Length: 443
Ligand SMILES: [Zn+2]
Image (cartoon, rainbow, N blue to C red; front, top):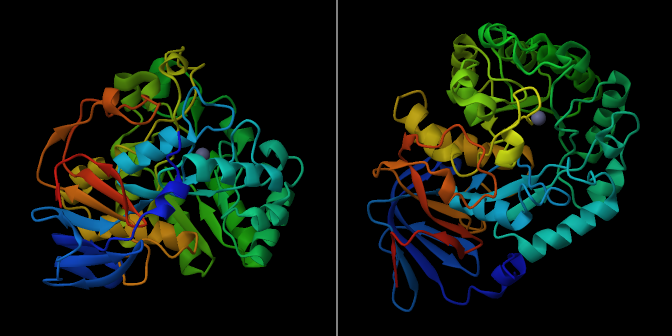
């Protein structure tokens, strides 16, 4: 399938006007009706009544136009896990969900832990992806936690950050060395905070549902111990520490203290931690089994407040495709994680924006501008000069999430059947339409 970015680069002779939509771009504090002129894959003008003669017109009256969403936590599964997802299917899922940029977590088979593997991954991305994909490298060889990976060489080969995600780096000394390197190389160090000596064989939050199901629990201390440890280390060497998938109120309290003290730390939260609690496993079974686990209602409320006040910087999906066969195993045998690319925006628009917890502009900032800023990439904005990466949304029409219609190979979601608003109806990467549901007139 020749569907990748190489093909996208060939197009773009004709100017395009994205006309009459409500443009919401927090990077310029814009919220209003504008036309957008696109030339050779770049935004050249935002204005009113831009001439359309001789230009392709995408008619957006009644719809909303935002900078394309950016996900800094995506598991593509390729190489080695193609039965779960591939670069191609993940990129289609991204485009379907309004994402124009995603990342490639390194916990593939083999683990992306040297420059050669990064270069191979780049080749596959260029061949197959419909959207931008930014690779991350492993912190330690095979993410085994015993020896540092070739971080500097991987940065030269084109990684944007390092993480052993799926696991935390257990040895403080290794985390310290990696943070030091990341500070020199000017990339973020991203931690999956989980002290395995505390989490042990835990399957879900150490709370009510764990007791009821008689399964071993995962206490919040497994998360906060590593968060605080890394923060102390990051401060010593002035490295950018990024905390992945924050799940609990206690982590939020620590983040508040650390940020107030000037520690260079940022944090992300997932849609599922914002919308579900520990008792979701009683209803959804293994489709609510995640790491870190879903916590209590008080934790969930703390995450929403922290996202609103900036203590948590941004939203990331932790898109983690698994086969339904794997997820159909007994609770203690099933893998952790759910898919997220095709459900993140509509779920959060419906449950945070429509319920008044965040404004639309705030949601877009946390799903597009700030994720781009984390990786210091010039995206997440519709300013003239930026690449024309944008998403057109229908905010009015209610629809039902149907996992059978996912572009992702993963069907593992607890949100199947949920009624939502905020469907992405057209996604554009570098001026090229990569997803179009046919709701918009183009001429
Ligand atoms: Zn993780």
